[in-house]
Structure formats: structure tokens, C-alpha cells
Amino acid sequence: MTVKQLRAFLAVAQTLSFTQACERLHLSQPALSLAIKGLEETLGGALLIRSTRSVRLTPEGEVLVPLAKRLLADWDNTEELLRQRFTLQLGRVALAAMPSIACNRLPRALRRFRERFPRVNVTVHDVINEQVIDMVRHQQVELGIAFEPETREGIDFLPLFDDTFVAVLPPDSPLVEAESIDWKALLRHDFITLQRPSMVRILLEQALARQQTELPVAFESHQLATVGRMVASGLGASAVPSLCREQMHELGARCVPLYAPQIRRTVGVVLGAGQELSTAARALREVLQTTLCEPPA
Image (cartoon, rainbow, N blue to C red; front, side, top):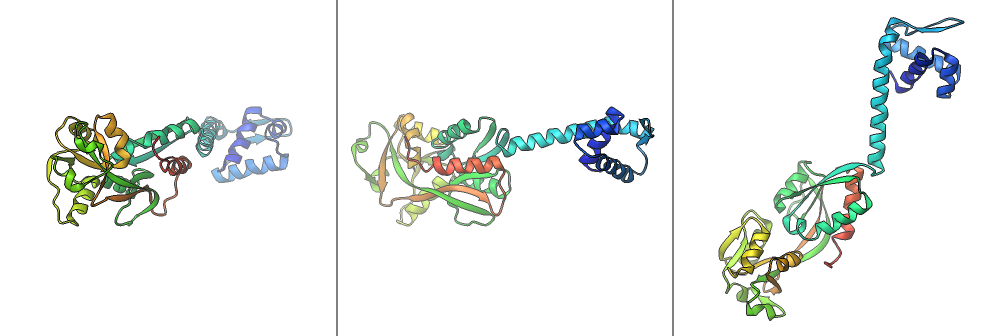
């Protein structure tokens, strides 16, 4: 049973005229008759009784009329819905992003996406770096933004930019006037950082371990905003990706370039390996690739 056959049947059933049905569907009489015959053969019996003077429905034809109306309405609605999604007049896409991106550069990219595609809804999962990778790998989201993973099993990674960690200091620290500071000077403060398994915490520990230095943690939190507020309140110092600089300043802390060691990591878009993206996800990926690479305003 095809959509063409159902349209042919319904046109005849509504007009009770093959001639009028042909005009409505822009079909020849042989083509219309062939469609009706094919439908009857598929269903196993006559739907119409046709004489030289009239056309009428069989009991089975009467039963099919409301069903055909509903099926064709559902088909037309589905066709329109998909057309709107393919043309980005409608749609939905899910994205996972690590907090340092979600709270800083991502809003600008989402604003630009919304300006171009106002009827496409975006769901943002603000989760730690490892969960971003897992959500993409298990197809819970189509796109992720994260640090470059050490293993790419089940995922593809599109690099965007390299980010360097900066020191986060209380506003009254004498070190805020320096052009840059080293870790030795930074660790004279009590150190505040994110809790494990945050990738920020792991990167800090790995970088210092290569210098035979242990990360002395005085305070830890799950949220970057809490870390920034604790630093601003004078409880200690921290180190975060430089893309968090604006957020730290808004919280009242100050950021200074950090070296010895300098910690650098690539940020990029994470995709499922070989996964075909929806039209909305492809459009969002393009906006992310152009916008997130831009330096902060």
C-alpha cells in the first residue's frame, strides 16, 4: 500500500467520480485506475464499485476512508516536519561542554547560532570533561566540547584552539602586578582547585608531577565559580584554563600568565566516530568551529 494509491482512492471516494479525481490529482484515467487496482490487490478485495454511470464504495471502502484520511494527514505532517528540520526552520540538538567552556565562550557561540536559526532548540549539558567524552561516545549527545582526549576510541576530535593555564589570585595579592609568575611563587598561597575527576585537576597534578612537585590542595570544589569566589575572598590562589579569565575577573579574582611549567591543552569539538550528524548538529558544529576559535572580546 503506497501513499500514491491512498491518495488516488481517497480522491475517488470523496468525489465519487474518476473524472474529477483525475483533475484533482493531475493523473490520467489509466494511471488512476491502475493505482486503485494495485491497492485493491494489495488489500485483497474491491474498494469501489464502478459502473458506466456511477461510482460507489464497498463496505470495506467505507471503512478505509477515515483510515486513509488519518494516514495521509500523518504522512503530510511528517513530511513537513522533516522538511522544516532539513531546512533548519525547526529542530533540536544536544551538546555537552566542560564547565570552563560552557560558562565562558559557549554563550557567544549559542547567541550567534540562535540569531541564524531561531527555531532550533539547543540543550546544553554542563558536565566535566570526562563526561563530555562519554556522552558523545554513548550517543547521548551529538556534539561535545572538551580537551583533546588521550585516546580517541569511539570518537573523532576536531581541534579548535590551544589553551594555556593562568594563575588566579586574590585582588590584593602583590603578584597581580606581575607580567607573569611561576608555580613556585603561586604555591606560596594556599591552593584552591576543582575536585577529582575534573580534567583541570588532573592536568595540574600531571604537570607538577613531571617537575617532582606535589599539588598542595587546601580547598577544593566541584564548581569553577566557587573556586573563583574563594580566591577572590582571599582564601588562596588557583590555576585555571585562560578561557576562564573573564569569569574569574567577574567573580573578583585576578589572572596572571603562569609558567614553569606552562600547562597547555588543545580544546576541540568531540563527535561520535563515523556518526552521521543531524542537519541541526552540522549547523551548530560550523558555528562552534568559527566562533570558539575567536579570541575573547
